[in-house]
Length: 102
Image 1 (tube, helix red, strand yellow):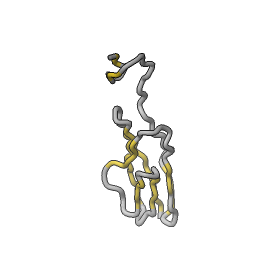
Image 2 (spheres, rainbow, N blue to C red):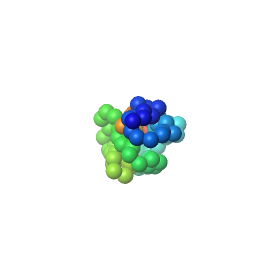
Image 3 (cartoon, one colour):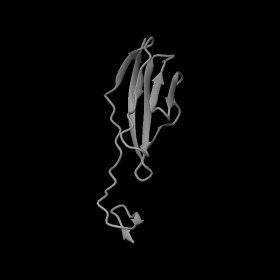
């Protein structure tokens, strides 16, 4: 048995290195109360699990199966959303900000 760079044991030669998954977010998003922003996280690699951490603000939802975040703001304010992606080895978190004006 051989051990790869991440400590995974198996048969054969390994030229595998597990890279940290990435979440790319734009700078703070500015929206109006009448807007309905939506963001889709592209599945760039099979086997990744996408989610949000903590409680979402009223009017927000995250569809894990489709990696889709939707938000119909109910009040003006600044909202922090923490998105997560996990490959089973290296979990990653990224905070996004949505600024809702009246």
